[in-house]
Length: 169
Image 1 (tube, one colour):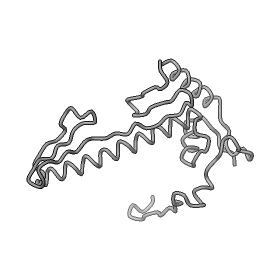
Image 2 (cartoon, rainbow, N blue to C red):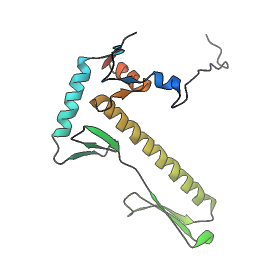
Image 3 (cartoon, one colour):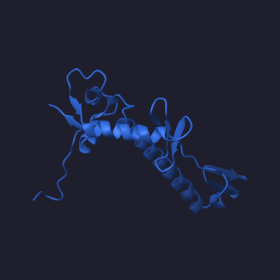
């Protein structure tokens, strides 16, 4: 049994470094055939296309995942999530945090109170987290729909994990 207090350090290449770029697979120019897409990938791609084309208009809005899909390109983009923070009256005034539509109040308090400052910090953290998840959802959609042609190591691992690709040595 491994020692529970012993930590194992793993070297992770920095984003944008030469080591990180080595893992990128270009699906259009994969002359070495590092990745083989399976029938499950093709079936999923067709199901995605059929689902998107069944909706009227030029774009499909997926409110659950927070993405918008353009029909022409079959490419998803994240919908940016924003809450409005309105401060009035200086330090002794009030601070309001409004929902993304600007109609309902999520929080209201005096600007100089610690609880208000904590609420603004929490709001910023939640907004950042929501936008990160939406970017992840858009990337995942683009990988599975075939809109993304240059796959990263994480993209390849997700396809392999889903059984939609087989990685060759």
